[in-house]
Amino acid sequence: MWRFVLSRIAMTVPTVIGITVLAFALARLLPGDPVEVMLGERMSDKAAHAKMVQQLGLDQPLPLQYLSYLGRLVRGELGASLVNRKSVVSEFAALFPATVELALCALLISALGGILIGTLAALRRGSWLDQGLMGLSLTGHSMPIYWSGLLAIMFFSVWMRDFIPMLALPVSGRLAVIYDIPARTGFMLIDSLLSDEKGAFRSAVSHLVMPSFVLGTYAMAIVARMTRSCLLETLSLEFVRAARARGLPVWRVVVKHALRNALIPVVTVIGLQTGALLGGAVLTETIFSWPGIGRWLVDAIYQRDYTVLQGGILLTALMVIAVNLLVDVLYGAIDPRIRHPRV
Image (tube, rainbow, N blue to C red; front, side):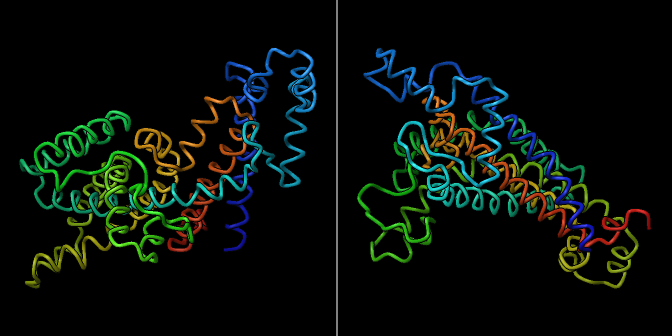
């Protein structure tokens, strides 16, 4: 087992190196001069501009800049923001809980909704319900996040406020501005529960519903189609037919026998979607003004903040790799054929 784990960790090393190259290159391909952003009103001072360029090492050839960047990474240094001079690691640590909270809620919605839709579609195979649910899943899979986000805002916020104000959802942020809650854990749902502010938890939930639903729509469609496919295959197996022949209730045959065995590959897909949700939160956080990693990176692009962009991309990618690695290892622990492919 340890050999399997070490082999999977070794396979991630080239990926990490490739990510450092991409992060470094993408930051340098951005139009504009980060030094001008840093200098602000003094950008017309050529002497100050040249001095700042030399201090940042931007006057060196790109290969030397990349080697210097790798050297700092080896020492665990991601640097500080070129705009506000704050540590990249500290800013990432402060904003990461917001992204994790959004991604986990989106994962919960996609997992429960996808398994329910896939199960109903499999049990009514070929019917109008099956075709309608799979068509809905295909729509959710094909619709871009920025489009579904705008539609959700129009329906659940604008139109709902006109017709049913009690059900209208907030458009942006994590909490209403009337609440002042200390960030104990960084997770607003937990912090609002621990606070003495009345109505704070309800406000946190209402702010989380729409962005998490929009983010989870894509993954929900994948989970639904996978659940339907695996459940249809399991329902045709002999042990399921034998359970039906014994006169067991339909719900027990489906839940205890068929669905339980069909969920093994579904759980793997759900685990892999966790990393995708962390990456897909960029657009969602931008649309809903969610103060997380995605919005932080978008702001870094606008400000030409090389350090934040490089460090943010690298740290986010490492989180995604870690999640995928964990899923791969757990799946190998469950299924010995993954660990010993020759057997």
